[in-house]
Length: 402
Image (cartoon, rainbow, N blue to C red):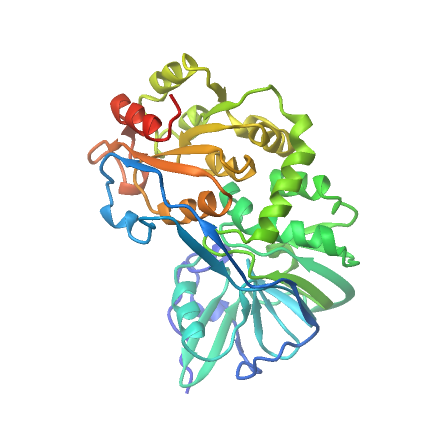
């Protein structure tokens, strides 16, 4: 007998509610790996050279953050990228769709019984997916927002799925690659569904010519069932990009090169405005000092969020040296040319391996410089921090930026 679990504060829309506020669906079709609708390969499985960090200077607050970093140049691999069409599909989460066959489809593939489904079930309990998956006596029970608008639409939807819907870094790593595939395939559609209707997603849709139909967020579309839904699977590989996706990023960079606000080959990616808007979140206390030092060495101080997306990409397209605090802005280094040098400045570090995979698979020479957090100022991942200028100089010298 399935027992509805206690699920307080799991779904963003239903915080503080009891588990009986969810609609519970027993997944069927989960034992079969066959897709309910056409599925075809867009990019084959890949394998390509990947550089190890050139330099690591300073002491991480979390020593474990370096686990998984390669100690020498090697290779990165990834699975094939698919274009999946699903019949009678209903969006149920930020990266998941319920198919007419009663199975759950995510941007990583169809959810089938086994270890992968168990792992997904555990992850959904953190509350980031927009749904809850429970394993119960061999059954998979899906808890979703109540279907208050059970409407069936004779339409085709493009589904661009990702966790962290309001995060620009998540957009770069997860959503933009899906957009690049969809812009090439040009599947005819009536509506596009996105994790959240953020300014950068709307700008990217326009930049890629995907702005000729309405755009709904996952929350807005969760009550609809579409005749057909199209999604791209397997583009997110913990920051790594395969050769075909890397070529797409390079083409986009070149198409935006003319939009660069200024001509600069050396960039410091400033988070100074973030320190004003969010003073209690990873505030780099001596950032002005660092900016002054780098400006004297010919670096342009660039604040990405103050510019349109095409101009952000254009600035990085010409960059040869990039220095910046860990964050979404520095990840735009993916658009710099192969051989560019990237130095990421780190405080409390959870995403070092993810960021390293991005730099490595886009052909960068890269490194990390670790600062020290201020004790007990806030939660560990939000604490203010400082970077010793000597550590900065050592790391830049290691990357031959001087």
